[in-house]
Length: 191
Image (cartoon, rainbow, N blue to C red; front, side):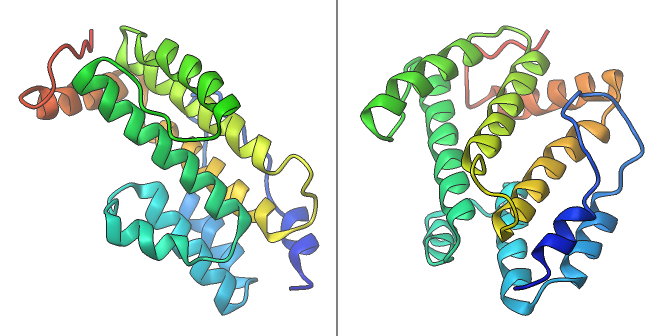
């Protein structure tokens, strides 16, 4: 599509600084999708469903695998690896990263150090920084492609997550989350 440079030029600057700032993800998303064609809008919808994390199943991943987009494939593959490693670490105390050999050891080391952070809020911040860095890595040599727009949306969802929470409500949210899974997983500290 020929208007990618126009869309990219209009994107606001965002930072993952974990501070609450005026930010309306839905307004930004609506502005972006209004300028995209139907195929790109579908890709955005798939990405947002994945970022919301509510649709993770083998059927959802199968649908995602059919999306012809480099960013979506790389980002969702990374996300799946992190989620699988997190579950394995929580249940067994070990990691399961299913990527290329060199990445496996580097990602395993990063995840192991993150998962060992005792404070759950600090752990979630570290995970989101890892995702932010992966987004930057995926789009390192991209300049005016649709993947830059998708990367912006993925980053905006990270910012939105923290923007919705002030320090007190964030702590309460994560304590509630831990209480919900405590019956299933043992050894998760949230203090």
